[in-house]
Amino acid sequence: MPPKLKDTKYKARRRGNNEGSIYQRKDGRWCGAVTVGYKTDGKPVRKTVYGYTRQEVAKKVAELTEGVFAGGYITVSESSERNFEVLCREWFDLFIAPNLASVTEENRRYMMKNHIFKAFGALDVEHVDLVRLQRFFNGKVKAGLSSDTIGKMKNLLNNFFDYAVKRHYIRSNPMQGVIISKGSGNIGSDEKSRALRPEIRQRVFAWVSENPLLKPIVLTFSFTGLRPQELIALKWENIDFDSKAISVKCALNRAVEFDDNGNVVSRGASIGKTKTPKSIRTFVMPDVVVTALQEWLSYCKEQGIDSEFVFPNTETGEMRTYWGLRSLLKRFIAAHNLENEKITLYTFRHTFATILLEQRENPKIVAELMGHTKVSTTLDLYRHIVSNTVYKQTARTLDSIYTGYAPEQALANLG
Image (cartoon, rainbow, N blue to C red; front, top):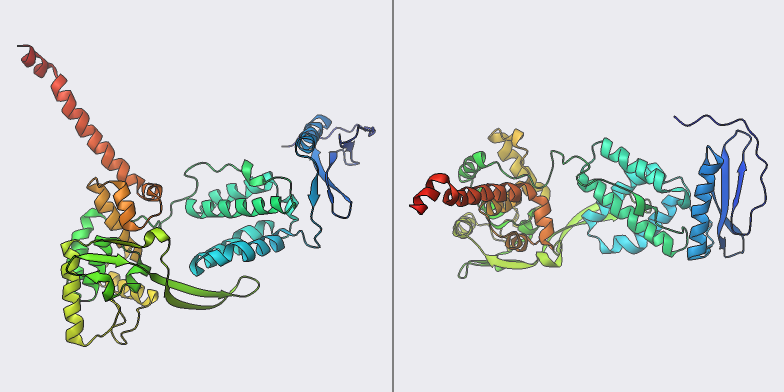
């Protein structure tokens, strides 16, 4: 609860040049104002701070004036619009959107529209300060947003405020003071690192073996770690049965068009670049995948399925859609009462990584096989697997070492 305002009156006195001014309003609240810069038309830019005591405001004014003395006055670009939403949209459209895949762009626009702009959209960019930002993120953590979503919003806002500083809309980036504790935010039921539980893997692999289409799809997913978009774009020319090699060179890309307000106008799909340059990779397939693909190729020839794609739409021979592949999986899940397992197309990719890490494969190798740009991405996604495996192995190592130090063994050695 804020302290009760004193009913005293204080007459504002003249302060030295560049020291700012401090005064008390009629309602008893203290205010301080400092000239922090000038607009290009020569008009001063004033920063106002508030407090319940003169000492509180004097401290804030001193901090502002120290910033002016250290960095000099800022020159604020003239703009009829200093509205946060207008400037943020302008920045995103010019510098960010052209470098994003359509699906990522759609995700970021949704994030801005439904979270960031609802909180700050109507404000002047200068008024989106540290306190407002900290309250915003505290609220998102409390509301249960995933740590991944919170991290992306933090990165987005940080980059925007860096831009605003360079354009002289603000003096410093307020995001630099925002604190989000590591691990804040819920993991959520849709966490992408969810893999098939060990106790159900054998059953799932047995069930898909009864389906000539799902068998090669699920086994390729689970034992190569391909992304769904990579598997859909996979062509027979990318498979070398002689050397048992599979090459990932492209992926399904969603093409999304937006209107001036960032709303989706249309959606489409095409073959294009992989998620990252590191995702372009060639590696040796295990025999289980080689056999499954050879059987699938024979099946396609028998059924008259002629396509350049490995897993096409079996009726038209054209590229299978993401939604069509997901629909196929949903029918399989319903047929075998697997709804509680929360299986998605990504489940099999993460089963691949989980199996390798459980077998103590080098995380760097796993990262390369999965097409991760950094090994840290792999370690972050599967840290629970790596930790459990390492801890168990550490315990076994310590037990084996202790055997040599055990009293009975030590006495035997002495004898």
